[in-house]
Image 1 (tube, one colour):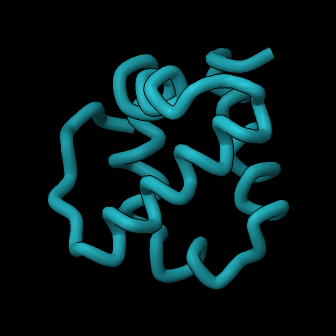
Image 2: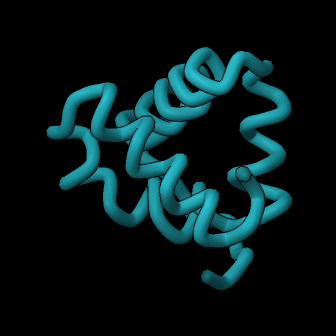
Amino acid sequence: MTGKQASMTPEQSFFAVFCIETLADALGTTGDKVYKMLAEDSDILDAYIVPFYDVLHTQGKDYIVGDLKELMRKLGILQ
């Protein structure tokens, strides 16, 4: 993952916010903290959520949360 900020379509932006807020709810934390984890502590937002929007947005909320949590664990930003 590169750490570069990707440009987003409006749909990707709405989806990114959905991912952040849904993951925050699942983790019992704030959207600000999750954004930091996805965009500053890693580049999951720009290297995974945005580029794979076409596939990810067709999945259910539970799948998306589980997928993101698993990726965060693999990268060491979530235990």
